[in-house]
Length: 353
Image (cartoon, rainbow, N blue to C red):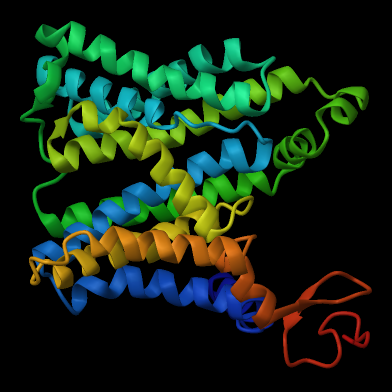
């Protein structure tokens, strides 16, 4: 019993000294609490559906940032990993009757293999050459899907998958917990030695290689890790929507994840994920509101484009970093972040100005 009280006291000490003192961390805690408590206030099926898809796409956006944001390997065909996992998951579920808790991880393994297929030929490419090459892979796979309709379902795709769970409420908690857990794992990877090396490769690959880092191995690792997390998102999507079709490989999906990431703030994991939670529900809300006026169906995309352009113009590093920079300041001596109204650092007591 004494050990339990010790851990509880330590938890509240950390909460008081490390979480509540910073607006960004406090907002994250409140977001997690609100996300998990949301079904207690509403169980509207349409509303839960929006949050479920948003959670799935948040995993997808975080996986793109892990590869392109931290490593600098600009991937314009990230939908490849999402689509491969969706199709592998669907085939395993429909033909071999694998339950979702087996088909989704195996679909993610299929996405890892796709990461190897893409990563190996792209290791020596940089910049626009790399981006265009990655863009070609989902287009090639889409052609293969159309070429063998007996296996892939062709233009109609594969439908009739098992439900992710027995109820919409359980679907909600599965996707929400997966999003929070995988987001934490991706952030821990970027905060580890591996993340520092990936960041070094992004900043100056030649210098990283000169320092003795096997950049080829780490870039390939980044492709595989990104493919795995995107594959989990693809498998969840396939079972929730109960289909896997060419839409999971569309070029538009690859560019959508880039927009989410740029809007939220790259090289952070939480920025792109937050970008999805801002933009996806916003677009759904605009669709519902503007759908009542037949003359304004295209205004939704116009407002979306204007929002993205304004973000790029006034918040080039992304919306979330822009907000955090105004709520928190960095100590000039110890580099610890403090709330913006503090005059002295909470750690070293140095003057903040």
